[in-house]
Length: 72
Image (cartoon, rainbow, N blue to C red; front, side, top):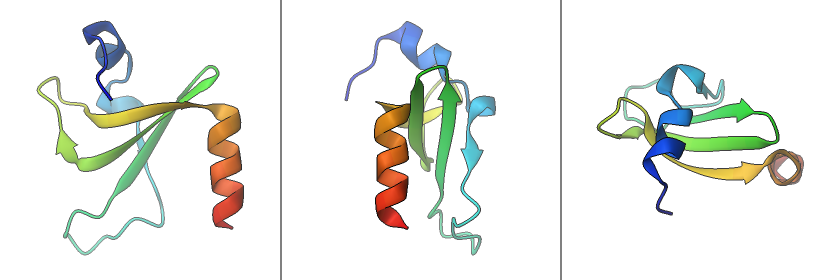
C-alpha cells in the first residue's frame, strides 16, 4: 500500500502502541496499532520509515474490531 506523504505524517511513531502479545525476545516480532477517529493504522515495528514511523496499513475501526474478534 502506498501512502501519500501527508498520510504518513499523520501516523507518527508516538501514536502507535505495541501489542502486549508481541514477542519481547528482541527478534523483532512486534505489531503496533494506532487509532485516529474512524481509522486504525497497523504496523510492524521492524519496518521503519524515513520519518521515524513504521510501514503500516490503515483500516476502519469496524474492520479492525472484526479482525480482533475473529482472532479471539
